[in-house]
Length: 149
Length: 132
Image (cartoon, rainbow over all chains, first blue to last red; front, side, top):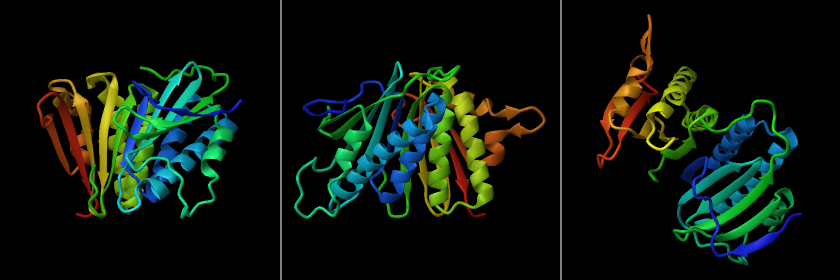
């Protein structure tokens, strides 16, 4: 079941993967591609990986479109895997998630993520960064899958 | 984070293991391609990335490989950081291939190994020029 919750503090403490890039449109594809690598290593089935990539793409696109109206700031992804549960946090240091009357989008991004993910949380991190936290169930592991060294 | 026009920079931190090569290779490939890197140099960049992914985990300080990837119209730079003391030179030495030489020295146009600014860790910097 999918739920959207407001949380004052979300975030992963020791992520398995962290990427930080300038919040530019071209870099959404970089993050998406990196998530593809994550899915490959974790032996995630195609449908689940497609859902994860779409959700991450939506979250990163939100950062590019909304977080920095007059400049370019950082956009980050943190990923943590624990017992076939994937925690993904998309981070920015922009103005936060606020209603926007002049929004260029249709407002479907977050509802779409909520549909794709097991859970979705919006919040503020330790350093006051804006966080969109998504959790995915990766299903049964493939033979020999192991993330750590 | 650099915000200079024309420069793209990714900070990548990955837990040691199979994820390093899978993620780092994709990030380097994408940034190099976006920077209009020639195909032969793209191949070189992936070769360097594979070598870093294979050897850097042994020298990493905290079981995570930390790489800053910077690309612009002229070059691609990989800055492998958070290495143990002398880890930069040891990582460089790991690139020795019998009968071939050192893959880092042979492929990269500029190689620097030593203490990182601040002195708390070591780093290896690899630079590829797109135009000779």
